Length: 68
Image (tube, rainbow, N blue to C red):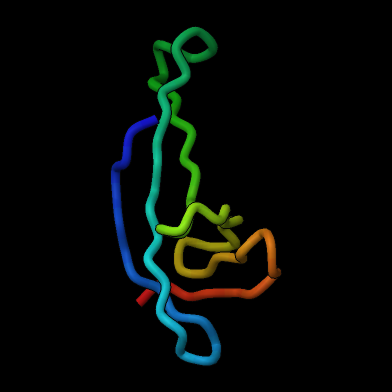
């Protein structure tokens, strides 16, 4: 897994978060299509579910955060 992007996000209360985007290449399934899988995590390691390209949900708490 490679770190491919970092960006800042904020919660509804204005609390700042640092998001890291990791990418893995799937070797065998779709090698010709260069299929990639992305995962989103907070800098403290908590997992995120991407809802849109700008909105994410913290898995542990359910809080929604937004890219700034």
